Length: 112
Length: 113
Image 1 (spheres, each protein chain N blue to C red):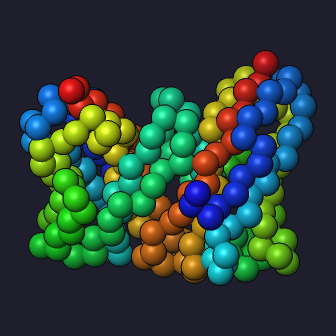
Image 2 (cartoon, helix red, strand yellow):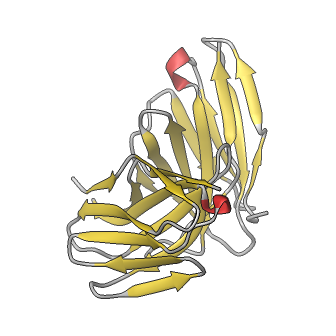
C-alpha cells in the first residue's frame, strides 16, 4: 500500500531561521508528488507538484526538491505568516484508479 | 476563494441522523474528490467522481454515499451518524484524473452530538 510519512510532526522556528521539512514515500510508480499548505479551519492550498527525481520548484521562501524516496520542503528566512501545516501527498495508482494519498503533515510555527 | 464551493460550512446534528454535504467544483473541472480530515487520521480519501461516474473509492463507510449530478456538483450523504463521524469534510476538484493538483474547498465541519 502506498504510504507517505512526514517529519517532524511539529516544528517551531524563529523568524529568519531556515529549515527543512521531510516527506518520505513508498509508491509503486510515482506519477506526482504534491505539497500543500493548510491554515487552521481551511482547505489545503496547492503549492507544488514534482514529477521526477532531481526536480526542484520554488515559490517565494519555499523550495521543494525530490529524490527517489523523499521530498524536502526548504523554508528560507521564514516569516510568521509562513506558520501553517504543510502537507505532502503522492498520486497513488491502484486498481485502475488514481487518488492523492496524504501524509499527516508538519505543523510549522514561526515566532517573531 | 479557491473556486470550489462547499455548503454548509458548519453542521451540528445528533447521532443516528442523516446529513447531506454539497460541493460545486471549480468551473471547467470534471473530477470531484471527497476527503475526511480528523485530528488523528489526517486527510483520508473517500470517493472520486468524474463527469458523473464513480471513478475511485477509498475508505468510505457503507453508511456514506455520494453522487455527481449532470451540472457536475456533488453531494456526500452521511447516514446513521456516529460520534466518530465528527470531522472536517473536504471536497476537491481537478480538470481530470491524473497528475494534476487538486483544488480544495474550505470544507464542512460536521459535529455529531
